[in-house]
Amino acid sequence: MTSNSSLNPAKTTLSSLEIARFIDHTLLKPEATPDEIEKLCHEARANQFATVCVNSRFIPQAARLLEGSQTLPIAVIGFPLGACATEVKVFETQWSVQHGAREIDMVIALGLLLDGKDAEVEADIRAVVKAAGPNIPVKVILETCLLTEEQKIRACELSLKAGAAFVKTSTGFSKGGATLEDIRLMRKVVGNQMGVKASGGIRTHEQAIAFIEAGASRIGASASVAIVSGTVPSMTGY
Image 1 (cartoon, rainbow, N blue to C red):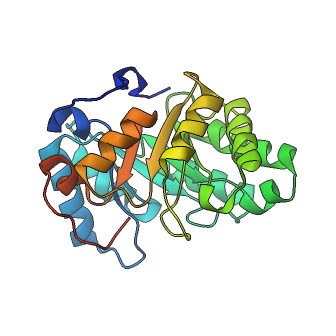
Image 2: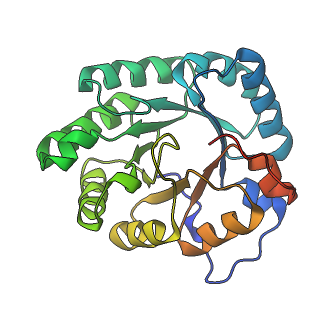
């Protein structure tokens, strides 16, 4: 499991570089261009972010631009709905890993979870974990804004049983993003057995620190440069 959970003290004072190592620098908007992906990767290298997180189409470009750095490329799978067939998620995962992805963020089969089909949800996650292979951590995006507390707990438990490395709050494309309450709940459910990623709506240094204190071991953000520099972020993006 890839996790920075050991860096989560009760009250956190972290340098910009230490915060940067929590951050998945993210660009997932449908209109993203290759030039924007290149800028994202240059920012990630310059700031030593943990990863960049992009749609699978851009994984070959991101892998090339990040080669030789400590920043890893993430591909999102079944994004942003999670409603495609498991076989499609498996193919996208295998293709992404073959083209340089070193982490995978998959969207849970949300409709199946809501319908109580836990065995199918677990099988969907397990298939992606198997497709990624033993050295590629898989994060499961729960879309917490659409779930009850009981459903969030079940989703975390199923992700753990299926062998995923992280649970993650949000795609950033639904009606809400990460909340401190959700991070605390997710951390309580998975303990130290998994990483917990907060994503969606995190735009300032102070917010990032609060989520780390709540138990997040990764922060997904498009305002990553503003977070580490303490500047005012733009109001668009992930």
